[in-house]
Image (cartoon, rainbow over all chains, first blue to last red; front, side, top):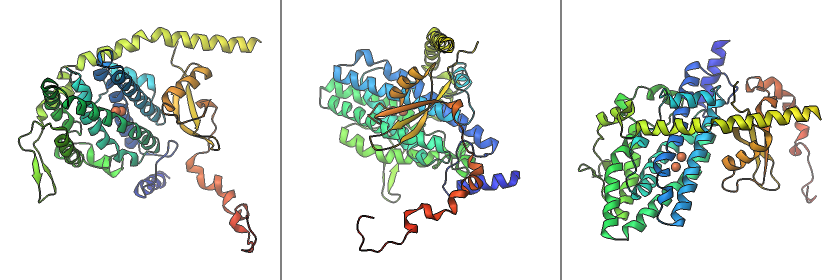
Length: 312
Length: 94
Ligand SMILES: [Fe+2]
Ligand SMILES: [Fe+2]
């Protein structure tokens, strides 16, 4: 019987069909998905902070409205993904607790500070750009609710990237000081953006099984290469350079060659040693704790209404 | 006491003439708040003209694992489909 179920699972995955919540699935598949989707959800939620930092200081009402809408989208992305984890039996409250206790991770990119308003543009262009590279293939991931959440998210991400690029184009047509500000921001975000695809394939422990289960569709290095190929012409059009002396077109490969990020720095930030790790978690914890009375009051209000209806 | 709000499933009618379609779920203390949250989470870009929210515990589902026996009755009733009936080609609008 168990073999039957396993066989059916394998066949469903192999035939590019989707696994749905009430299907039988191997324990490892379920655990891997919960871990990956929760980490992804946490990233969307924590990812609101670096840009949220600039909402009150956006240089115009137009930029403020755009930034607000973008940050609100990221909250929405987090919620779609938490919703997907719950179809696997995860508990949302439990996931939030794990995040604020540091027992589950989020993307390290959000542990870097946003020092100037140009960072808002560069995050939209490069960070959301890298996220899109990662996420587009996930629209075909084998677990139905995750794939559907990714389709919604990808539709919205294109606005994020374009508003960022447009913001940078505006700054690049401004003063020399503004152009320098953009280049400085690109210099700071380029390597962390490349790290968003995860460690090199040779060191990535989870990739092989995730590829077999078709949770993951491309390897870290494949996606990183794709991102570099896409970003170079965009940088040229913008008039900025990437801080990598090794980056150049390789006509034999038909792709760009490029250097490796500092992987020691990557692991250090993953392990909590980034500039903003503590601040991000402390802020999330405070928001959760400060909201407790609202959650309790709303629950009490709902309970009271149920009682009144019962009495009437 | 656990203060975690119950789970609601959300269905959205994309536009007039279409069915409500399941889009995901959310937590809310009551139906009214569930509707408001659903509007903010699932229809930020005019994705819907109407929303249904249903307590997740109220949904009864057939399991995909039972798919074959459960849906089998539909399999042998080809007369439910319009193509079952041969209609002369010169009869219009059928
Ligand atoms: Fe997002
Ligand atoms: Fe985004």
